[in-house]
Image 1 (cartoon, rainbow, N blue to C red):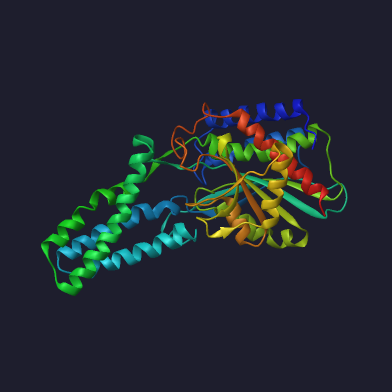
Image 2 (cartoon, rainbow, N blue to C red):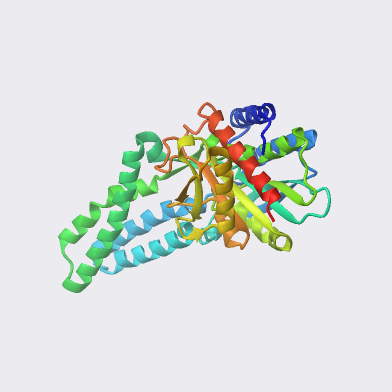
Length: 398
């Protein structure tokens, strides 16, 4: 695609201003919150008023905002209970608590299941769907997506940085192995005070896990993931202002809610629209933070490496990168966590993920440093160029 620089730059400027407005003038965007909904309605008004889409809707779904990271509170408590019972000579208790904790962690975080959700209060979240319809009968569909909700702050990461943050998590993981070993040793060889003392030495690690997330502080999420949301909207804006339309392709901007609550918006969308997406070929391209241009990556694996995105989507992103940069982007795997594209891929819809963030993780990730004064318009612009070329290539291919 021969990109019109003026229209492209206008889209970047609009997006930066929209992100700043949402961060500075609207309430915090916790999953399922009034702030999340108000941000979607703000973007919806711009889309409708400017005629960037032919059909714009908001679809609601139920969510338990605090359930997804609930394991970080529940598991440390279970492990401490195991130590207390061990002190009372219930030698199998630590091992039992470790097993229960692993089940919770794998189900809730490892697989993003709604394992703990029934235990937590529920609220209403929503997805914003804006569709630029095909001029004639649609033969295929492409969905560009970002999530608009923001995360609870990671306490240790914000206060002490990556070293202490990762060290605390490693300490907690080590503690789980220690409790397992001490419990088994005691059951085989008998109880000893030194076993209890070793277990007690693990308490700081469990405390680090307990204070992992601060439910009272929702970060601004300017980069993660208002940049992704505005990239999706800006594609519709660009098409309108460049007077580009397609006879047989439907172009959709999907602004999900509650990604930070376990991909709940993407899951709700996939559940409701699966049959529709199977009726004609559908391509989903998710944006996950457009901030660190040196880390722009085509993520071929998702959900902690357990889900592999479609070869078609991976190749489509590569083709766009070759057109923009002369070579493909580096490929990567989301090694801890997931993006909305994981839920879409699991549902059986062709999907891929494009992101530009230091996976170390970035110093601003899930902290108050992810603010409106920490944006990178150049990186956002590069992401938008890639997206427009993805659309152009997809439109021309059979």
